[in-house]
Image 1: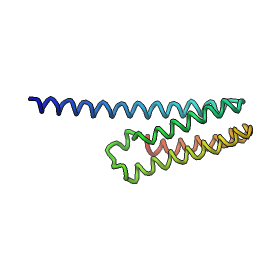
Image 2 (image 1 turned 180 degrees about the horizontal axis):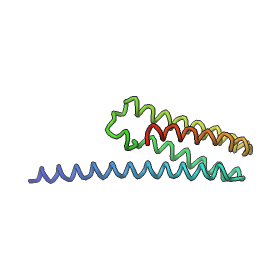
Image 3 (image 1 turned 180 degrees about the vertical axis):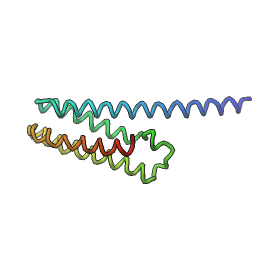
Image 4 (image 1 turned 30 degrees about the vertical axis):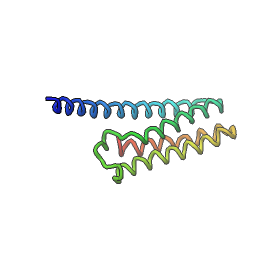
Length: 128
């Protein structure tokens, strides 16, 4: 009886932790979406840098989660590696935009921000 109870508790913890990861990934994606909106609209370099910092942190955190479409894949699978590569390209582009914002080149930064949408769209087709 005790072993049965422990097994049931273990399974419930396993499934509840999976849903927590999914919620975390959703929060990270919402942060990315909100940050992109700020980057596209702001005329304040500091506000842009703050949004980009939050976006970078959310993208880094998203690498710790797995999209539902890839659940059950081994960590070294081609699909997971591709997912991480997509996030790495997003982070690299955030860094490019951040450097432009630091140089107060907001128009150039907004032009580069369009590439974030391209990265997002390409990866949503694969992993969403």
